[in-house]
Length: 106
Ligand code: FES
Image (cartoon, rainbow, N blue to C red; front, side, top):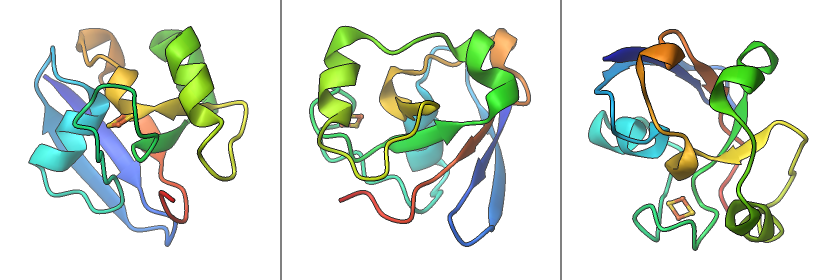
């Protein structure tokens, strides 16, 4: 179980417990965190689960996959710390993870 903080573009924070093995996207959706649409259900095929990983967590969350990289071309306002949250696998290493959500997912 990892406590993850999702910060909406408005600044509203949602701190939720996410079971290890789920993705950061699934953790948000299961806990009704607004702002992550996840239209493709986690297949890295829609880019509507875009998040910005807090700089202090970039090493732990790892790099983007090639598929993720190409999908992010379809997202707006991509930054060096942008990830598809469906591709971030939650584990005990990510206890305390902080991600920020973009203004919109389209
Ligand atoms: S849920 Fe579609 S790319 Fe992540």
